[in-house]
Structures are given as C-alpha cells and as structure tokens.
Image (cartoon, rainbow, N blue to C red):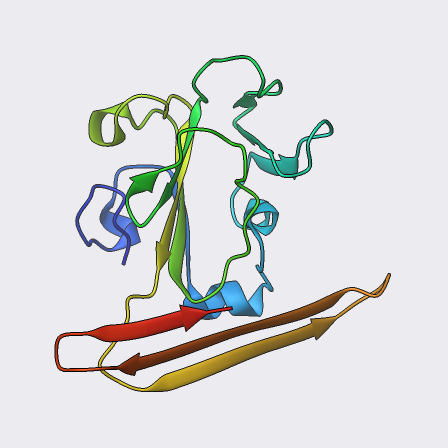
Length: 166
C-alpha cells in the first residue's frame, strides 16, 4: 500500500512512477539514514553538501539544488508524515521505526503543491499503538562506526500512547 495520491492504494494501481519500500524491506536493505534512500529508486541521488555536512543535496532525474545558500525553493519535496521540510538544512536524519518510504518521480504539484517539480520523498513513520513493544538495532563497521537505536511503545491510558525513539 502507498499513499502517493493521499489515499491508501496498491502501488500497481497508481499512475505515478513510484518506488516504495515497507518496514521489512527497509530493514533488509539496511536503510538507516536518509542518504541510504537513494538505494531504492532509480535516478535518485542524496548526499551531504560538501560545504555543510548537515545539509541535504537531493537530485531526482538530474534535477536538484546544489547551492542550498541560494534562497530558492528546492525542486524535490521532502515530507515526513505529511509535513513538508521547506529547507534542506538539518535534513540528514536517521531513519528508524518507519512504516514505509515512497519516492515519487516527476511533477507532483497537483497533490503536494509547489516545490515538487522533480518529485518528492515521502517518509511515513509508524504510529504509536495500543500494544507494548520494544525494538533495538545494533551495528558496527569500519572506522569505529557504531550504531545503537531503540524504540519503545506503550499505552499510558486508553487514549494516551507513548512512543519513544532513541
């Protein structure tokens, strides 16, 4: 299921070039940060800026914005749970406890408004649930790389849910 047209549909019935991965597929492909999303879609490049490592440079179908200091709106929209990230500063975030990630290629202005001329990346996180659950991800790599992430979800009352990520 995808929400490329702002409603749940099967990806095969959506008339939009879309690449979508669910939670299990993201874990299998070891997608842990935003730059890893480029593994899931053709013609997508995501990297940290050479000037400021916390700034995203996203290119989709060769269209993007190399100089983030120029006050122009980006051509690729970045959405997390339906909230638009207007600027690429601080956009390099870790991805954990996700429901799915969708990459929509081509103009998406009809449904998502301006700043989606080349397409968009739609990140959908898992919602808190009525079940108590916990998850941890550990990793290690070269150059003393360590990865420790955790998630804890529990209901506090019938109508108040707690979901912690670290």
